[in-house]
Image (cartoon, rainbow, N blue to C red; front, side, top):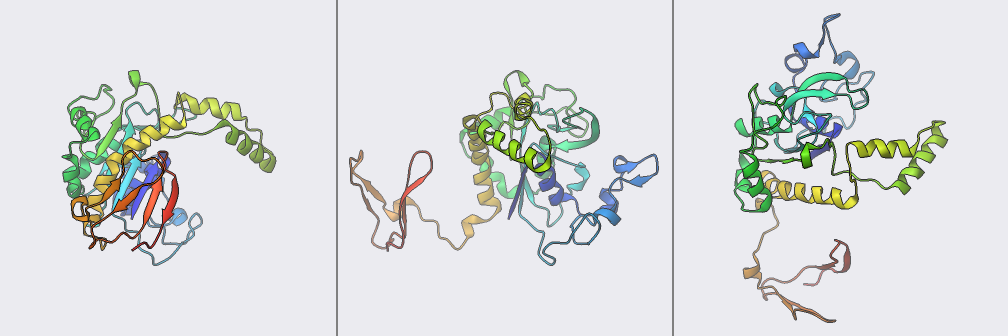
Length: 320
């Protein structure tokens, strides 16, 4: 199991990964209301961190099911406090992605800012600090071989690991740090332009319909033009093509590390190389008919033909 979240979802994936002890991890100074000396998080209302107690704001779901998962992925979220990540047995590995100039969640150690009012909320640890800590305490040890693969994202990340962060407000353990570390990937925008989620996109046709339906149902007066322009403030030049290029980069980082962390190499599916299968496809180029052949001892099970945009246009099952 992998728990992957972006923005607020990133806070959830990381919190679920590392927040497990209420008194020690929530009842610390920054989470205490100093006016009445009470914790901001009230377990009598919210329930325990695992959601296994019925309280006014928590309905127990799927009681008895395990909360364990192997890998947490964060896109632009943060961790409430770095002390939650301890490196103990049962804590998952973590991979992170973050825009250096994210105006809402800190890239390393820094402040959470309310998007609408720009008010300070609390100091937390962002992607750069979280992944560094996970590397230090050994949670990411299984993924180490993936960092050595000579692919573009790794080669670029090796360079970024040596570049100091230009913003003095970001630090790790109170000291200046660099743009990256193993098992993460930072996105640096041109001129450090403010961006929060460049991997997001929307189309105005759907937006108009959703807003109209919402206004009709709730009696509200949302303006799709305002929502659209506000979205562009932290995602300029928004488009599906732009978003997909970011997602493609993140998948290049995620996939080999997940392969190692989830022990997919030792799964029941045997991995066989092309030279053993002796796969042949021809002629090349092809006009209207293509022949596919494998070694006699390695029978084909299924064949799928995909277009360049990733759509399966023809499939043959149970060939044997």
